[in-house]
Length: 133
Image (cartoon, rainbow, N blue to C red; front, side, top):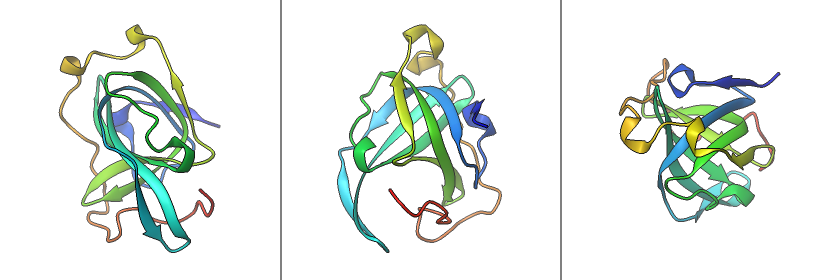
């Protein structure tokens, strides 16, 4: 069962996560080498009224977010990198544009980010339970 969460409540190792937020920043897609070969990704930061989180968009989702958009992300999972929780959107994930009034404006989004309980993890993309992107 998917449960909508506030960004501040995200913890490392969660599956099937749903969050609503405003896109604060985006980066251009790039290709990285993984154990399963090259994968296209992009990174973005989204925020809600509790904080902000880095989002890694895999495959078909890479490069699909634009700064300022209000979005709902469903079917995501969390990992951690350098002590901070990150959100990942792969092939099972969905991104939907939502109403501007459903999320705060960028200036109303706190600077804080969810912290990982386990600390630094090498590799940045966390435990691999999702085998297909």
